[in-house]
Length: 115
Length: 116
Image (cartoon, rainbow over all chains, first blue to last red):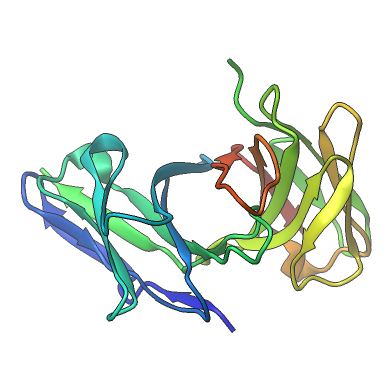
């Protein structure tokens, strides 16, 4: 069975410092990987995806993520965090054999950026 | 352009009642998916519909059902509500359903269901 793990419930970082949110996955086959962000009382907003190709993907709002097949990881990064990046971040995985609508999400990581 | 819209925003029901949640996809989007997000957890896939047909189903009991209309809007129905059904229900739409190409999903703001 496929699964997605976000090992940190919360990540605290000072504004201007690098931000990393970790994600590891366990699937059979070649997964498609996604990051979404959720602000309070809002739906999920798409940040970036890895489908195929370059392992380093760039997304919205200055975020990027690196696909590491050997470590089965897809960590989200931002070189310089902003207070406005404070939100709940979800990693998600999908298999090509699955319905495109079927995303499996991790439990989420709360990011707190302090001024 | 309007994004994915969901109604109602909030809903309070009692155990044993039935509820219907509604979703309107982005104009031109033909695929709709439903997710349940319990507080403190990630969203869990419930259903995907495309062209009025069910294309995927998650691990939810038969109390959960859905349908898609000719205008591609969708309803999620939950019968015999339990306290554990209290959650944020998210709808997502995408342009098409295809196994060969990726179509980004756009999420609505959700419906907050509270079961007392």
